[in-house]
Amino acid sequence: MKTLVFLLEEPSAEEMLKGVLPRILSEDIYCKYLIFEGKQDLEKKMELRIRGWRLPNSCFIVMRDQDSGDCERIKRELKKKCRNAGRSDTLVRIACQELESFYLGDLAAVEMGLSLRSLSTKQNKERYRDPDGTPNPAEELRRITNLKYQKVSGSRAIGPFLSIDSSNRSNSFNVLVSGIKSLVASS
Image (cartoon, rainbow, N blue to C red; front, side):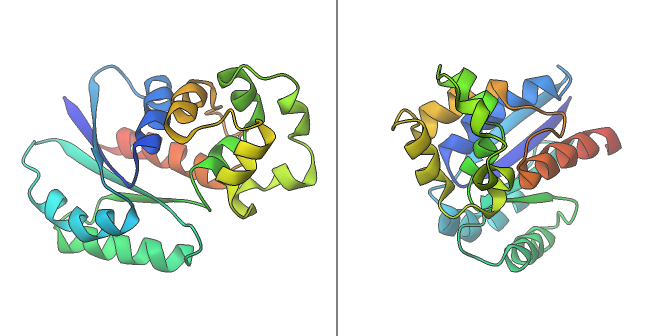
């Protein structure tokens, strides 16, 4: 049995993945989630956690928010930590700007997950065409859902409805999904 080990900066990412992964992975793949207390904790401890992992046939995926940082620099530094841990084959993905960009890229999923009406009609408005460029997507999501969106419960509710066929307007979400699919197919 293959194990995908996700190193995540927050519990909401785990909840989103639990809604998405069953639709893209076969049943013989087990997922393990290592949740850290924010990005600094992730960066501080990930190398040791990867190096100390002993379960055979495991693949690692590191996912972190970009926030206001330089995406390429963040990814380069995370990959270096993976190499230092002896796992240069680790998949590293950055959510541009934040995890909530994934949700702004698929307002139909937000509408269904949070039982809202007419939210999906906003998807073609300019501000939602490129959610990865939206400053503070979490705040925007709270605003357009009239504060119904909460990080963990919202991620749990929205995740199962996120489109996995590249129709999500968040490029960073589509890159995450295609990366996971490729990782599973190649090993």
